[in-house]
Amino acid sequence: MHRKNLIGLIVAAALLAAACGSATPTSSPAGSAAATEAPTIAASEPASPVAQASPSTLPTVPPGGPVTITWFCCLGGGDEESQQKTFAEVAKAFEATHPNIKVKIDHTAYEGARDAFAVKLASGNPPDIVGPLGIGGANAFAGQWLDLQPFVDKNQVDLTGYDPTILQLYQQQGQGLVGIPFAIYPSELYYQPDMFDEANLQYPPDTYGTQYQMPDGTMVDWNYDTLRQVAMLLTIDKSGKNATETGFDPKNIVQYGFEPQRDDLRTIGAGFFSQQRFLADDGKTAQIPDAWRAAWHWIYDGIHKDHFIMSDQVYQTPAFMGGYDAFNSGKVAMNENFLWSVCCITEAGGNWNLAALPDYQGTVTAPINADTFRITKGSKHPDEAFEFLRYLVQGDGKTKMLNAISGFPALKADQPSFFTQLEQQVDDKGKAIYPPDVNWDVVTAGIPFADVQSNTESAMPNYNKSLDVLVKYLTRFTGKDGLDVDAELSKMQQELQAAFDAG
Figure 1 (tube, rainbow, N blue to C red):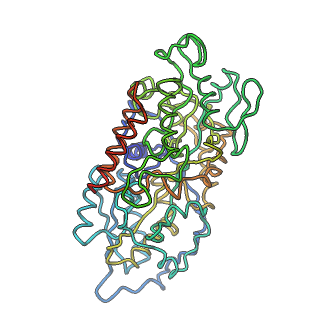
Figure 2 (cartoon, helix red, strand yellow):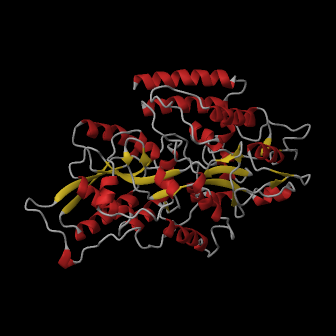
Figure 3 (cartoon, rainbow, N blue to C red):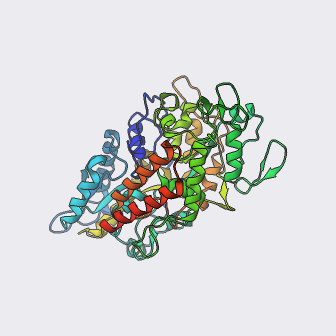
């Protein structure tokens, strides 16, 4: 099942979740039953004042009656009944203060949404506004989104409340500003302090730019080589030996040292270095970035040689959550993942924490997911659509929409309240759901390192078919020992090129 769509299903069970668009299928959890209430995000002042009309200042209804705009869902999140109910409430509230505009919700379930949206685009009468959708969902239809900059300028919309790094996600060369930030999901390193204590290891750095103290007392840079060494010490077989010791049994591992964000080969690559992509600058040639090649070698060796990462076969077993988030099994010491992972991390036990991601050759990259709303280029009513978009991301609809998808707010003023609400969550017995003193600061500290100039879900020709190629090789790399990785990458490049050419 699609990873972020799976999170959408968890939202329906009142779990904290984030349903941003991507396109890599993973399996649903086997019997997952963690239950946390989604945090309520306290409303802040809009990034710029969004005028809410009083009865005496309501917009004038045009002679022909209200303009009807169509809101299309769900290329990303929003499939759940509870979310659809909230969307309808938000649309109705908007109409009450904007009698000149009617909002028609066009809900197509995620599994069929891309095909349905493609048909609507081809019809020449596309929906006006689309969302919430993530970067991948939007890039499956690259070139179809309206440049919002003229509308931002016309309405004097203040964007200074957003981190400049996040704004770059939507400032695309040749296309202008295709979105306004709404919900973001930075990545960070999750870890189990008790496992480090048992191995007499120092915890991973809690801030970026800090070195790590090895068991012999030496201070080293916190990079992927250091993480590998630490992860091997934390990988334990059934006899208690770690992966560095003679006699270690890789066929009987009871605890793994590290779990990557394994939904997408691109995310694995971007963890090493972000400013690269499969599509060359000429817009038509498939390429294998050097840093990404190094990342895939690192992962492959970690699975099949050093054994501190589980194979796909192990990943799919019930003992490690049956193809779901293996860290939540409580048998993995470290996990690189997005913020939406906190939805179900309570399954991992009550003493996890967050740390800084490692660097590669001195550069840190923190892959990021994000949700927002976009307006189609073919919209017949762009001004009215922008008025509604602004209501959703900056106006009175913002807080309800963020709560509906449990999105981490892109607006900096809203972010502290998100973590405050998490800290206050309790179960039905009054016990705190999240551990005390979680290092939430590292979440926002990682935003400047986000892969924004060339995001992991950047556009590719024939996007969906190209993703099929990546899923095929992700499965091979994580599940098949004895491969010549470089030879496999050459074949993958050829298959990507064929998909690009066919697009």
